Length: 148
Image (cartoon, rainbow, N blue to C red; front, side, top):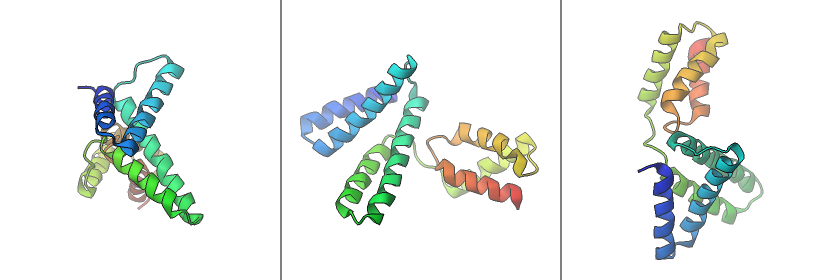
């Protein structure tokens, strides 16, 4: 079952169960997906839906930082709950060892030798790790390996 269909089914289930917070978050996902489909005049596949969900998670993490700085514990809790719901749709996260192996493989296959080759390595890793790892952390690891 495509991810978009699964999310739609989960919305119906949450509606029947009266889970207002979960329903609201699922509707936000579907809204983001629909907005992108309308803007680009395409039908999103699973990887594009995952990218939209990852973007939403990133936005919430940034909001949490701002809310913590402003002392708004209530909004921090709300955003954290939304992140938990969003992460349920992401594939299982890769372990540190798997990420390191993927980076080593990408460096070997692209022939990267310096930090100048980071774009090539990042492109190769991103294709395989999208949705399964925090790409910001992966980028930092690649930079460390290429400069060290």
